[in-house]
Image (cartoon, rainbow, N blue to C red; front, top):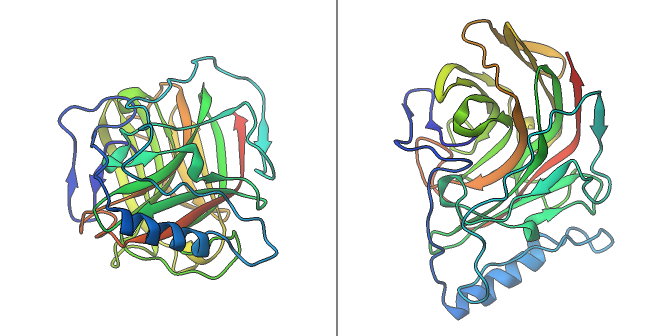
Length: 295
């Protein structure tokens, strides 16, 4: 999701959307005592069990070199052919990790919060008591067009391992989606952490910067307890959203046509109507695999 704050009862749009994020904030300073406490919490929450690899999680502070204020724009080559990735090791050259401070919702994205050491892609989110949101994002280096896009994803929870037990505190959004600058094309699967809707998946289709259609489907608590398969079929005349092989929604009006980048992100919110109020601490979104088949 880029540049949208919405709920089943309300939708709001930014006045000046820019690629790829519309809200730039400065990292708020933290006192030394809190940084020490958050560092200790990171070690406990992100370490998993003693025998599992411990993903390296960056605990932000008010010192050091700040993240860039703008992301690196990927190339615009249109690849051909089917491909897939299981995220069982370092990311391939098809992907780049976001590293900038202009993330959606005022989030700071950093490669230090991306983990591939546990057989899945882990995107870590840290929320601090001073209102800071430190998320993670991965995007494709190329644009893609019509085809079938499939993610196997576990939405945000406190589990520091892909299959561990975890709860879902308020204050986050987990998203897998396609995006072209200015939302010329934007096709979203997004799950948000407000208490009323954290068990729902939100489908959204944009064309030329405006919402064409959107809907919500209840998945249940397993949306953040285990992996589900989310499949998007984008054709010149229709867009279809499916979960675990079951078609949940198809739209056939105003279908976007502009090739788009593939995104996966996990970011903090501070909005009771979208994502929920922040919960200081650490949580993870996991993606087990991705595949693309052109059509």
